[in-house]
Length: 227
Image (cartoon, rainbow, N blue to C red; front, side):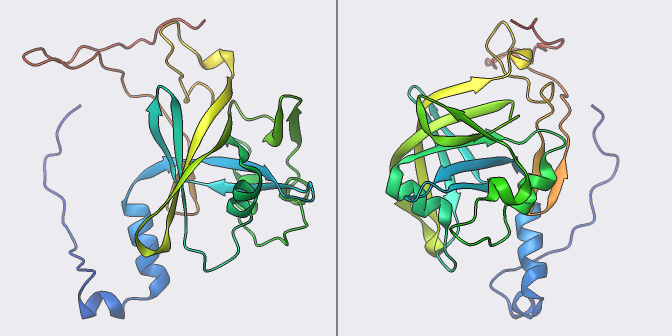
């Protein structure tokens, strides 16, 4: 890939300055949220104590570890009622489901403030997928699905919560699994999100072999065969 011929023309922002405070609040939030980059796009399924299924879109999914498999989810401050977090604290079980192309409008709509006794699955028209071995609902059609239980909860700055999830089982569309175990999310048409409302397709650029000192990067492209 060729390097840029010219350096970018930068605009400087100083969050501690009066000029920053004078900018519209939503403009500032959009700038920071989108400048931090592309993020995973998932919907999390839970059930409340009355058995009502909940579905909510999240973009703050973090890979914490592979052995054992642990995921992290960031929850915003409790300025509004968080049904997913409430259900997770009560039942300790959830599902995490990747959002594929064609499903992003339904995923986005789950962010509307539906009442607790209303199921987002029904409200947005997303079919429920149930598995007898797991009490939380899966989002039907998702190519990557995780069944997870609450491991721990860590308070962070500004009232944000980091919820650590322990993966009990997960399900991956076999069409995207390579012989080396790599899951090609682009091949599964999994989408990504920038900011809070801009959705993008993904496209593979290149896979590189494990980096070693004194060795030039080695391409793994084309991808290994599928299973």
